[in-house]
Image 1 (cartoon, rainbow, N blue to C red):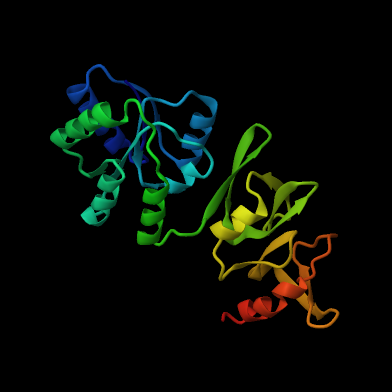
Image 2: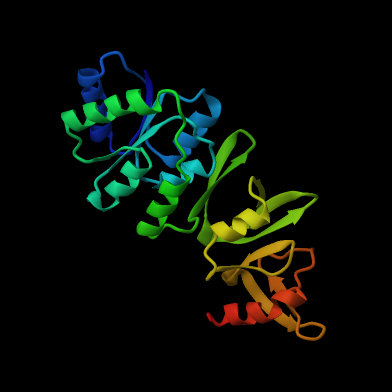
Length: 253
């Protein structure tokens, strides 16, 4: 049984590995990872293990973000210091949830459950993750991992000026540097992932951050032309069908 541990507290990771040796001596810990970024890089570069032990809150974000970048098909046992409020959600979806400090008997029971239920079936995490995002106030994307050459860049959504498409590729433009990077998501998908109080899709080509608006000018009839910072040579005019909604969005309605 090949296992990957994702835990940003080194003492907790060591203890978990020690418990695994006690309750499942046949298990092999392939890697101990301590961040969302490290987990994404490892999972993109290696075959998936038999099981992942995944802490929910990591130093660079919530582990839910990993699922947005990697199609995880192996079973996951989540670990957290939170209370048992979400426990029923995990049980209903046949995914275990261990509360810290993890007890030996609970880990043993979770591994036994894995062997009986998950061994030959990949669980569907979608309903579970949506429920937990809402419960923990993480319904919208907070950070994005972007592969750039041989490295991975972490961009906070507060630093995302806007997203746009060109030649069927979606790009993000970063406010602090003005640089652009290709991203894996189409605008239709991004529109549902981003906080609608901050981001708005002004037309088919652009989703913008309200804080990236530099100037606005009246344009034919009820339409508005938006000047963005960092600037772009592409046309940033709010479409006719979105103009009324755009004006409401600007004032927070």
